[in-house]
Image 1 (cartoon, rainbow, N blue to C red):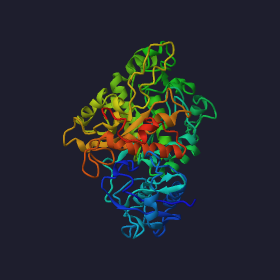
Image 2 (cartoon, helix red, strand yellow; image 1 turned 180 degrees about the vertical axis):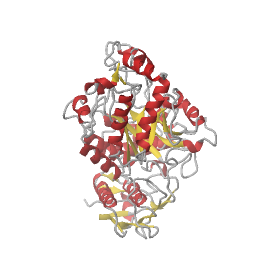
Image 3 (tube, rainbow, N blue to C red; image 1 turned 60 degrees about the vertical axis):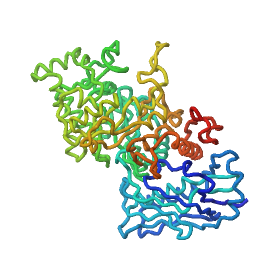
Image 4 (cartoon, rainbow, N blue to C red; image 1 turned 90 degrees about the vertical axis):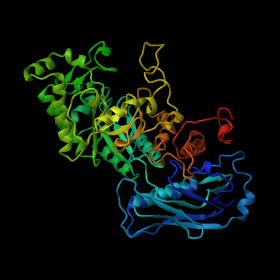
Length: 552
């Protein structure tokens, strides 16, 4: 049977449009349009960049291979009559709204897209990345009925589609368990489908140091789990380039001065309370060990380490961490106490000197430091005014950070931690639970308000937010199901959400009931593309929107 594509508002109501995040301004028509078996998206732009051409090629592939049946009872088997009356569309063309040369920058700007069966235009856009991702919106609507393919809603107009916040991120910890490059790339693919544009790479921690830094090869050589579980300099550049081609920036984190126990494997002179026992007295989780922040030699070592990796990365952001500093570790470390006595400084003053040095190594490179919230709320250190602060302990702490006039990225454990609710991972603790119980459902994260408790003047400090996966209980075998599709909710969070805004395009308030059918569509499409996203409901419920709602 020949392939038949359909654009159809009459068959599929707007509430189940498979667009995630949904555009801020969306208008749809009622015309049914079949797409020819030779349907193809073409580019009508002078000297288009290769990454745009690659994106269009990928979109054409998805249109032919997703083969997602419509998520209704019968999977679209009753659409034959409508299909028989529909005109055929041979192809669509991407073009620029202005004569501006397409850019090759990893960001999103204002976008205007128009899909019309008469004009056969997919997108008018003033900037390259918007053309690319308007294209993604088109192929996200391809569904399957038996052997017939169709998409929904013609003509479709998306006007001035810009994100509500510039930072829409996902964090992956690759230190507690190692993730091969292929798994990271698959994650980046999924991120790009939902407009998540920042990959926060928590690449090293106390458990392992899998990052090969050419100026310090001994750290990974002795600190990685094995020689096969190391990200080479070439791997890092490959990941950065792969992300960039998908509109994603890579924010690397070298957490300091805590979470650095593994450095003792190669540089024991720089680590206090290394492997101290019981670890609960010296660290938040095993093994114990922190950089000797009061040591001038350790401070210089750390600044050089950070500079050596930061200068190889294109991002303007770099994280020095700064969370969960254990003061007892330093109180029990004779070397630290001697260094403090020699300098005449308190521990907080020494931390300030240490932080000034590490951050100077970044600002000298034109980078902006990123820190966890403790550096602002628990310590008396002087930070550059443009420092970005990640609020993680509680969503309630955002107002305290804003009161100090620092820019904010929301990463609250009470909404966005994907590892919560999996039970205790520490051994010999059969009654234990995860510290951040309960499990954070997509509905919970979808109700997050990024402007809650902030004054009108403070709202401009919010850059956006991210969901996070700490990997004590995660590995390549289960990363897809833990992350997806839950992590997509932060790309479309309620109340001035990170992309769309507080309301749907038709003016109604955003809510989980209207979001669920679109998230189902996204999840099923991810599975078709090789991302093992977890089911959100029984298939029975998916095919019958609203039937399984509470009190339905």
